[in-house]
Length: 141
Ligand SMILES: CC(C)(COP(=O)(O)OP(=O)(O)OC[C@H]1O[C@@H](n2cnc3c(N)ncnc32)[C@H](O)[C@@H]1OP(=O)(O)O)[C@@H](O)C(=O)NCCC(=O)NCCSC(=O)c1cc(O)c2ccccc2c1O
Image (tube, rainbow, N blue to C red; front, side, top):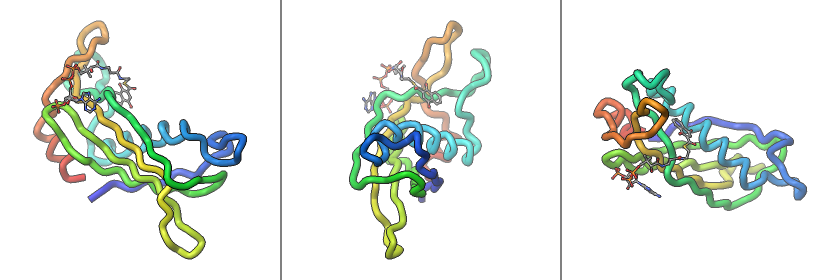
C-alpha cells in the first residue's frame, strides 16, 4: 500500500533550461511525507519539550531523476515505507506524471531516512524506539 498526493509544477520550481530544478523535489518530498503522517494521525512535531510525542529529524535524503518535468505538469507522488528499524524509518517517494497516451512517466525517486527522536529540554535530540502504535501505522503504508 502507499499514500498518494499531487503537486503542480510552479514557475519558481523550474530552472533556466525550463525544467524542474533538482532541488525543487526536496520540499515536495518533505511535504508529501508530512501529509502522509497527518493522514495516519501521526503528529509531525511535538508542541513543546514537555510533549511526550516524537519528532523525526532526517539522517539521509537523496533523489534520482529519470525524466524531466515542466511548468504546470501535475506530478503524482507515491509515498511508501520501505522499512522501519528500531528507531529509523525509510520512505520512498516516487514522482510520476501521466503521458499524452495515458501511460505513466516516471520522473524521480526520492528516499528519506528519518529517526524517531524525543526533544530534550534545550532543543537537543534523543534517539527513541519507534512507539508500537506508530510503527503499526507506518508498516501499513
Ligand atoms: C538523529 C540523531 C539524534 C541520531 O543519533 P545517533 O547517532 O544515536 O543515531 P544512530 O547512528 O544510532 O542511527 C539511528 C538510526 O538511524 C539509522 N541511520 C543513521 N544514519 C543513517 C543513514 N545515513 N542512512 C540510513 N540510516 C541511517 C541507523 O541505522 C539507526 O537505525 P535503527 O532503526 O537501527 O535505530 C543524530 O543522528 C542527529 O542528531 N542527527 C542530525 C539530524 C539533523 O540535524 N538532520 C537535519 C535536519 S532535520 C529536518 O530537517 C527536519 C525535517 C522535517 O521535515 C521534520 C519533520 C518532523 C520532525 C522533525 C523534522 C526535522 O527535524
